[in-house]
Length: 446
Image 1 (tube, rainbow, N blue to C red):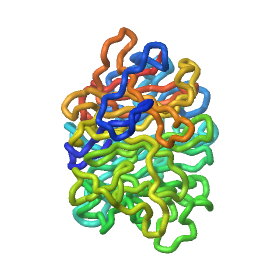
Image 2 (cartoon, helix red, strand yellow; image 1 turned 90 degrees about the horizontal axis):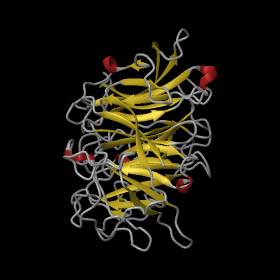
Image 3 (tube, rainbow, N blue to C red; image 1 turned 60 degrees about the vertical axis):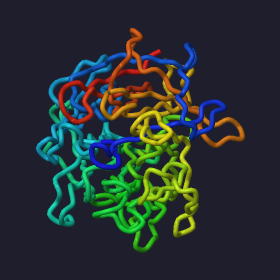
C-alpha cells in the first residue's frame, strides 16, 4: 500500500505547510475550514471490505462503482451502495501471501480500457509471487495484467482471460505504487515505487538509487500503449523512446512511492501524484513528460541524505546527471516524525474536484493522509487551491473528517475515488493492514 522507511514503521510521513500567509515548512496545524466555505461531510455508501484501496468506474454509462480490495477482490456497487452479486474478480490465489497486520502489496490498481463498452477489456495491478527469473533474495513481482469481462454476465470478469502485459521484480515488499490509470491520450500510466526498503539503498538499489536510474522501471511513472503492440507498445513521444540504455516505458522519474495518481477531469487534464516521503516530508506533484522529481536526491523541496534521513542537508544538486532540473512539488508538508512535528504519516493522493454537488470545491485538489498516528485510525482530509499570482506553492487547508451527523469518522485513509459525475469518494478502514471487515466507502457530500 503506502510506504515508508522500514516495513511497518516505513509507511508514512506527515506535515506542515502553507495556508494563506503561513509559509510551507512551518510546523503549525492547518486551520479548520469555516462553515460554508468548501466544507463537506462523508456519507457512508458501503462497508464490509478488508482494505479498500481504489474505486473506479467503467465509463460505460452503467453507473457501476468498482471497489478494489487489497486482499485480491473487486466488487461492484450500484450508485446507492448496494453490492451487485459476488465479486467481479477474485485474484487471491494468484497473489503473494499478505501480512494481515500491515502490507503494501496486494491488489493495488484497476483501470478500464477507454473503449471498455466495446472491447470489454480492463487492466489490474497486483503483487504476484516472485517469478523464477527474478534476482535471488528479492521479494515479489509486480504484475500488470489484462482481463476481459464474461460474455455471459457483464458483472463478472472472465478469470481465464488473463494476459500478462508487464512484470517488474521488487527487491522489498514496500513502495509499490499501484493506482494505474488511462490518461486523456488513451495510454496506460503505471506508477512504480523505488523498490522498497528505506532511503533507496540496499539490495536491489544501485548507487544513487532507483529513483535516479532510468535503466530500471522502479521509481518511475510508466506510459504504455495497450493497443499498439504485443504485449504492449511504446508511445512514440515517450521521452526516452530514442534513448540508449534507458527504459523506453518511462514517462517521468525520481519517485519514492507514487501510491495514488489521478488525471484532472477538467482544466488541462494534469496528472497529480501523491508521492509518499521518507522521514521528514510528504509531497504532491503535477507530473509532466520527461521530468525528474528528485528522489532520492530530494525529499519534497528539501535535500536528502540517505545516511542521515532525519535531517535535511543544507545543500544538494538542483539538476540530475543529464542536466535536467529536479522538479519541486506543488504541495509539501512535514512528516509527523519530523523534529518540528507534522500532520500525519503518509500522503494519500486524491482528485481535482469537478463535480456539481459542491460548487465551492470546483477546481480544488482533494486529498488526504493515511493517519495522524501510525497506531490509531485518524486519517485526515485536505483541500488545496492553486497558487495566488506571484506564488508557486498551492494553498492547503484541512477539512474535518466527519459524517452527516457531525460525528468524527475514524479511518486509516487508503484511497479516493471518482464516479462518472466527477463526485468524489473516500476509502479506508479501521485496520492498518489488509484484514478484517472494517473497510468502508464514503461519498463526499455537502
